[in-house]
Image (cartoon, rainbow, N blue to C red; front, side, top):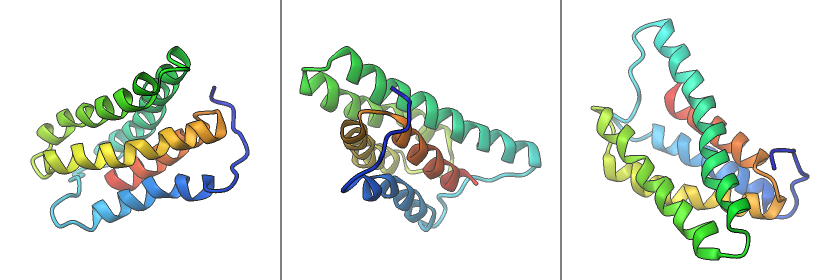
Length: 138
């Protein structure tokens, strides 16, 4: 499930959509994360990797394998749940827009799903999520 597969067709575009979305998010005034120390920067960097790996494993991997023939349970529910999952970081951050994070996660959360379907792997969604998350927090 995590083995890298060859990207074809729109796969290259799908990998870069979350990355570009994260970069555009950084352009919104007041949406950056404050990092007062090197330790905070390392914490944010490790969080970006952990989130990229484990969220994709859960929301794209587990649901895809568990419900292979059910579109609502394989595609729609994980996308909605992924969006709602981002409520907590929005509330925890004084600078973040809660609705912006939820709507952005819903919109960008469907892209890794399409990428996982196209490549039959969650490797590229993990890469896109990790790089996008790193751009947002660093």
